[in-house]
Length: 542
Ligand code: TEU
Ligand code: CA
Image (cartoon, rainbow, N blue to C red; front, side, top):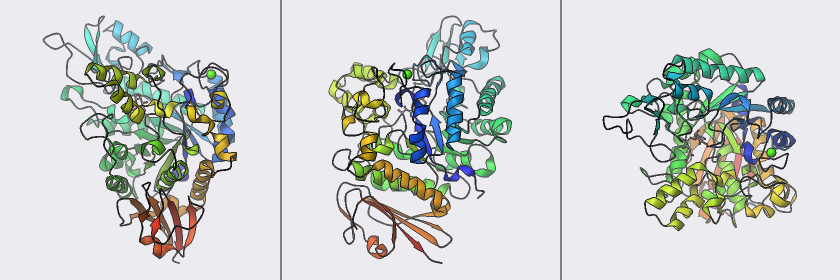
């Protein structure tokens, strides 16, 4: 396959609202991020995926954009943004902008015009439909955030479509003017010097509402190919699409080098494994580790040679993996580093979500009022009405709510964890005195941060980690073991997915080889991996 500069890159995701506040208003901001760039450089990341910082009424924390050409004053100014780009650049770090192109805010001038006036040039920028014969919603479609996906607009006497909140009307990508308007936005940011784009819910843009097709519409790939030819072809930017509905085949369509679409997509199959199929994300089942191995291996095999993978456990929508499938109490260090090992040795681009590199955990606030996320509040209301017990609802929020990953970054053990001198917009996790960047890096225990540094450094010096062929090793479901192989170099990655000691036969055969990384201080006992133990061996055959 053709090699690209970003193939050995590691991306660090920042949720700006929760990363670092610089002026005491309790809200993270761009000047705050700039003061932490050295931290990201020391970690070794090459790119920062910056969640949306554009002008926005914040119905969905910036995923509702009212002006793609300006910065939300809460986060700073366009000058701050330019400074962030240049200061990152000096440290060898590129900025990846988050492009929300499936929908805008209802406060975007395009929507304001379209909703006031059917004859406006923006009239067809959104998806308006007449009421059905009884005057109701045109279809039964539900929004991702609960309730109907249709809201009535008085002025037009029509309903408009919103796959998310009513304040996030969907754009109509079938209108060529919409597509051109989006391409202009991309050009503007490329001009500013950014080095990548993350496309929000890209798989939804080509919906065909009249035929009840939402994800992966028939025009999806033609549109992305058009966008590539129009904007992405020449500039040196890396692109990743968020594709909730993508299986391996679909992920390959997006990322196949010969198809000229995107460089990679986030596929979410592995993160759905603890959800009861056909129910909501809140309805949980035990994770089947055998299925986890299968889903991740399918992607590894399926995207090899032509496509490319995005590797991730966490993001701003997902609960933190160490709490979710690891053990954030007694086994916090080993489970955090085991999941890191498992991920970083796979083929693809690893994404680290802020705080993951120090083993930050999920949160459980006592009352619903402490939560800020719109999805969480909608679900809470909806399920109360449906008669669910409040404590069951709170349990689901503790397990799956998006604020789990959005609590402020824990920098040190000072008040509010060094995130702000004011009152944080979302409470800091009360465990910040025990879990924070300073303590992880400079305390007496083993450092998760140092482990991530090592993983990133290994990637920079070992082509086999970037380009090696992947093969799953046959083991029990409790163990995830695989090899990577390139030109006579072999890596053996062995991970215990559980909190129990488990037999691991292959270990016997490898014991003599050189260790690449290991999350316990001493050799594993013969033929056994301890709780969440992860160990990687290497072998040369030439
Ligand atoms: O998320 C896409 C998405 O499908 C969400 O449903 C997400 O997976 C969900 O929160 C899980 O319950 C993207 C953004 O990442 C998210 O923050 C936005 O709220 C959403 O799009 C709308 O822009
Ligand atoms: Ca601030």
